[in-house]
Image 1 (cartoon, rainbow, N blue to C red):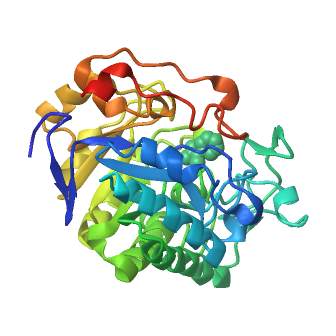
Image 2 (cartoon, protein in one colour; image 1 turned 180 degrees about the horizontal axis):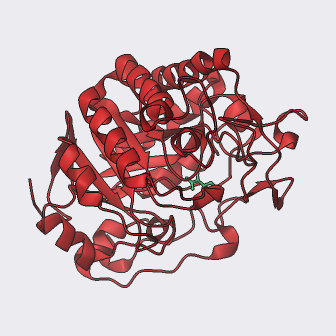
Amino acid sequence: MTGTLFSPFDLGDIALANRVVMAPLTRNRAGPGLVPSLLAPEYYAQRASAGLIITEATQVSPQAQGYQNTPGIYTPEQVAAWRRVTDAVHAKGGRIFVQLWHVGRVSHVDLHDGKAPVAPSAIRPEAKTFVNNAFVDVSEPRALELDEIPGIVESFRSSAANAIEAGFDGVEVHGANGYLLDQFLRETANARTDAYGGSIENRARLLLEVVAAVADEIGAGRTGVRLSPVSPASGIVPSGDEQPQFNHVVEALNGLGIAYIHVVEGATGGPRDAAPFDYDALRQRFGNTYIANNGYNLELANSRLGDGKADLIAFGHDFIANPDLVERLKTGTPLAQMEMATIYGGGAQGYTDYPASIASMDA
Ligand code: 8OZ
């Protein structure tokens, strides 16, 4: 189904007003108990004219945390706070999925009472995290025991159930950007010799078990997955088998009948041509919705939609300073630039105080 960025789209059972997706954006403003910020309902409601909002990455358990002040969805208080967010977005006619996240080895002992972060194998990436108000090297991880794996799957399943209780329209499993599920996919991060390491099939096993559990819990039509085949984010080192690895993953995801795959094309945050990769091979292997992301502007978005290479386009950074991004793209209103200093952490400044444009108020 081709169309323009501003034509409606049916994402499974969920009707979207347009093809613009707000990509997940980490903002580090969660309060005590890792409850989403009191300002989060306003922040997301300001951006509800997106066809679909995907929330900031959200922990499925305490062990899943890797940065300070990122929210969770595993306590009743967190679920209640997310309910205020989904109510605010729905009141504006928007749709919203929560992105479920386990950071794996991208974490620090100070977030875990001195205990090591968990990973497929005890391989520390060249990566930084943000704790105690500073960027620091991630801690040395420990390999997950085989008998701990069902607990990881269960934390995604129970968080998906919580997401529905909180009023979300669906769930996106974070399989991208060098976090736990992506770590399992990579030979350079996963040296396991059990059923979760070694072959392409074994390295994909945890991601597929997690997605199957989430889909079983809330319905495949409400389940999506984010992937970043060639992104070096969070210290991912290429192994050269990305194409067959991700072709296999997407074929298996297609077999699960989930609503969408959301693909970070190139390196997260750019450049788009980080490494040669055939994204169309993924598109061809997946029968449902393909969301394309990374470095898109109006022209590139409409050209990819027009060519049938994508169904929806996700915009990340542009949504930070442009709550009315859809209207600005539609009216050709110049985009505001985000302030770097207020992306991560803090309060309303750089969060809820970016104004909508005059043009969009008239629209
Ligand atoms: C920026 C800072 C911290 C985390 C991702 C969840 O890249 C993130 C993230 C981005 O997916």
